[in-house]
Image (cartoon, rainbow, N blue to C red):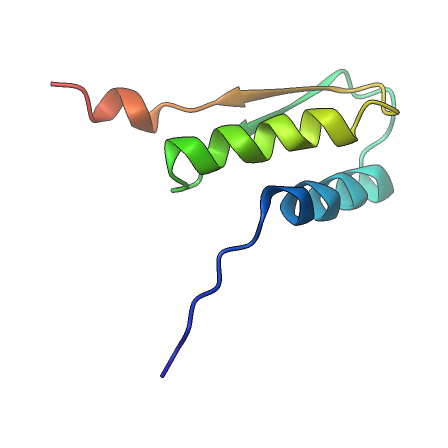
Amino acid sequence: MLIVQKNDSKMIASSTIKCLSENVPQDVPGIAFLSGGQSDDDATNNLNEMNIQSQDNNWKLTFSYGEPFNKLP
């Protein structure tokens, strides 16, 4: 049996910011995230937590979430 565990936004944000801090130069002006198949709520919560945790970095974090618009009638 495979049990899929959902990670929480704080852990996802922490891991993402650590990776970015170690690999992205501070003079990069911004980083855009795709929703990558996440639910709207998960994508929003993860991005919000990344913005909270990345306040010591120079880059601005933003999003490009087109998937919710594809679901509209």
